[in-house]
Length: 101
Image (cartoon, rainbow, N blue to C red; front, top):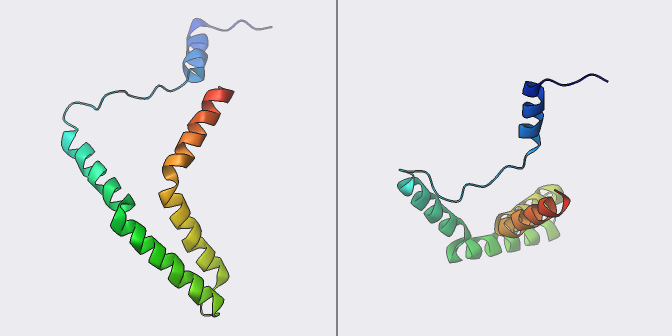
């Protein structure tokens, strides 16, 4: 069996270590973080929820009356579920990764 060099060993150990999340925001990122928080609040707020409910109702009605392709309608509905369920999806992935890792 071939022995590995210290460089190869350090590369393998570095590649195998889990990525650690950054606990604090980088210096100077305050405006960016606040803009992203505003965007998240807008996308997941009351207005967005009302628009998504109306969109799902309209798409469902158009699918039932035969005016819309079922595949496109299902894509719209699944997109709304992914948008509003993204926090639960990410936490599930993190939990699964923590258990298996």
